[in-house]
Amino acid sequence: MLSPLRYLIMTFLLSISLPSWATNPTELVALQCINCHSTTQSKTPVIQGTPAKQMTLLLKSYKSGKLPGTVMNRITQGFNEAELTALAHYFSQLK
Amino acid sequence: MSLTTRRHFLKVSALGLAGCNATPPKPVEKVKAPPHVVIIGGGFAGTIAAKYLRRFGEEIRITLIEARKSYISCPASNWVFAGLHDVTALTHDYQELAKKGVNIVHDVVNQVLPVQQEILTKSGSKITYDRLIIASGVDMRWDTIEGYTPEVSTDFPHAWKSGNQLLTLYKQIKDMKNGRTVVISAPEGDCTARHAIYERASLIAYYLRKHKRRSKVFILDGQEEFTDQALYEKAWKRFYRFGSSRRSILQRIPASKGGKITAFDAKRKVITTSTGEKLKATVFNIIPPQHAGFITRRAQLTDESGWCPVDPITYESLLHKNIHVIGDASKLDSLPKTGFMANVQAKLCASAVADLILERPIVSAPQWTHAYYSLISPNHGLSHIDVYKRDAQKNIIEVAQNTKVSHNPKLEAAYAQSWYTNVMNEMFR
Image (cartoon, rainbow over all chains, first blue to last red; front, side, top):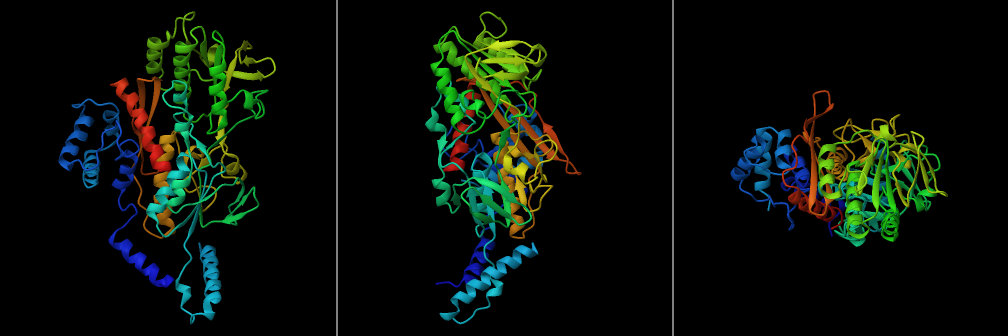
């Protein structure tokens, strides 16, 4: 049995190695994307795990209008290129 | 904060004393009881706040207070009229959330005491919190339409909140004789998810076109115009002969032509409009304007607008410390009140509350992304998009809007449905 103090220390150490909370703004924006883009089977494309380069290109093409979509052309207007690239990198690391 | 800490310290010391027969005394003053966050309301905002608070702050003790054991969602409830799904698809319970380590309390909150950091419930419990997240939604404003009272609304439902009134409206429209009329009254004042009124009218029209070909649905609109009106009217013309008055299944009367209603006579089933006209119908769906729910008003968390002003990063009330308000009840400049926005706010608030209570630096998102869909018919969806940012003064500015016409209504109808499935999974599974 762990004493409460040791338990707390252990939780603390574990949480240092694997933070479960949002550590950057990109993650908090990504959590808004998953309203539609979840990992479960649905009609909306699953974007988790898409290579970062490919997804950055897609997002920028939506923003420029080169790639016609439904809502993504409008959503990307609210983001600059650096923010889109950061989101692409974030989603590429998810499974 | 110092009071709270001291209270924890006392609690922990007491525990330490109780255990001192068995083991030698330990330096217990360093061990704090886990901080306690209470969430009031288990809808779109409250469930997500609970789930993400668990993720962002594993050591936090979380209690969710919700009156109902069974939740019927209001978003996607219009789809029942079109036979896209039935009430069971809208109905959920809290068992999975409980399994995730959220303490679910089914009780009615009578009062929040901000100074004492206490919640008093109908069953007589007193629940203390370190931080409180209120996601209790809206109440109807019963002072706006003469004769339309909470009692009258049982038989003439607003059906604008989760719950049984939706079931009443479904039954009334199903039982209505062919050739009779449905009236939907849209308020002049504040209304959550206003677009859903126009979706509701569309899908009732879809049902009438299929099953009651001589019936009509009228929108009596307290407002002159509405968002994306041209998109809706174009689709209504295509599906419901909107505009050609005699053959039209769906009609809309704007405020200037008598769309605003001032009184309702439940005995005679007659509506009085602001232009003095009296209108009869068979089914009345009267949606009054709304304001933040009772407990927020009682705790003086609302301002003169009837909503709860909050900080745009932490969602902490500007009127009382340690209380955060999210979802429809909150007021953040022009941020819309929808299920999608409630979900977004809940995630951002959960992150900020966990950071605050665990004394970490607060991480904030630069954007709020907002999307909603309206179905005009089962295979024809319209979407609306907004993206908001904060400027240097913390004012909220809209940086992207719904400027382009929908590209693919069929695909958007499908996306609407997958959005709903995703969000329900996120909330209840």
